[in-house]
Image: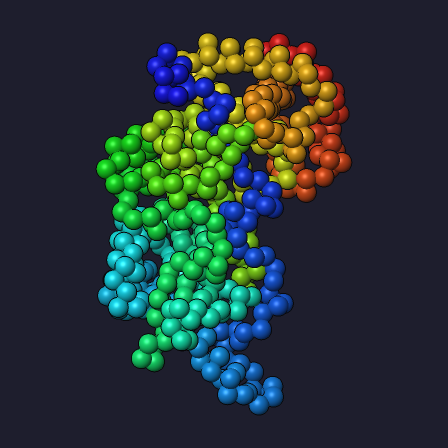
Amino acid sequence: MDDERAAGTPAKRGPRRGVWIAGAAALAVVAGGVTYGVAGRDESPKITAETSVTPSATGPVVSADELAEQKMIAGIDAALKGRAAALQSGTLAQFLSYSDPKNAKLLQRDRQVFANLRLIGAKHVSYLRQLSFSPELRPKLGANARAVRIKMQTQLTGIDPAPRLTQVGFTLAERGGRWLVVDDDDAEAGDRGPAREPWELGPIEVSRGRGVLVISSPGEEKNGRRLVQEAVAAVPAVQAVTKRAQAGILVVAMAAPRSWAGLMTGGHPAGAVALRNVTLTNADGTEFKVTGSRIVINPTERKTADRFLLAHEFTHAAMAPLGDGAPTWLVEGSAEYVAYRLLDQSNYSNYVADERRAYRKAVKALAVLPIDGVFHGDYDENSYGVAWLIVEYIADKYGLATLNALYAETAAQTDDPVLRDKAIHKQLKLTDPALVAAVKQYRGA
Ligand SMILES: [Zn+2]
């Protein structure tokens, strides 16, 4: 509600709060549903948009069907390679030459995607056909049309340190001896839920600041520039606590519902999400690492999202490459700690004091540290605040270096309670219940 901020306090953070996507299920969201470790099941020839390997000559005689299959795969991969090369070099005519010339709607979408990626600035674009997904027939789009699953790798200039993976589904058909894209969004092959990349959603506006790129909807450039300023103000607050920062960060703040993954927190839609950027680390396309995050703002919050919300999400982004084993209270508590510190330093110290007082009451009910599985319980408004107070206690009592060491140690682990207890004991010399007892006793720095 906008009127909450009219009183001179930041927006009430409960329902608008961001959410951090953690754990294995989230990685699937982040990577757009990329299938992990399935290389062994692939039976198609090892020819991809990236590499071309001649099928072994030592095998049995290749049948006519197999030859036709190999020819098809080679044709599809040639089209994907040409299309990606055209995107990267900025050659529109070449890009469009790999699409069905009779499909005006597809060509229009292609022109828009091309223009958007040029506007955003892409240092690297490539399509890697997923070998574990056998091309599927799409008879409605042509007698020989095939849907393929593709890992699209996009590295945005000045933002991404490495190519980020997104999964997409294309259908290609043979026309006059060449394979052309006839559908750029096959739902089944793409298997990526309702959300789309910002450059797939029609015209966009782009606003830039130091290490920040904001993508907004047409006519909303002013809000984009506002968000650049908010982001630039949030970054030092994150660095001051975490001693880490992402070199460049993309913030998506579009009106389009499909820019948003529709994630919930505590029974409410989240205000924003930090989605991990996943990068391939082997040529097979089966191993990945987190190389950063992008921030996507809930379309309903895009006009009111501020530096405090962004500080929360940027903290997640800064910590993401450390791994996803950290307990949720530490993940969310750290992000809240950064946001509340920035509030405190931004003339909102009365508001922060009120919040602290309110959450201290909730801490009283605690016997052990909040468990991951119940942290995001329905309408549990206290999880984030309680987590904030625990982290604030650790930061005040032990210092930021110890807080960050605890984060790094647990993040690199699996989410095993025994390992977590060991890390807490090593860093803080306390057991889980003793830490909670100390937080209850604590009356502030
Ligand atoms: Zn969060």
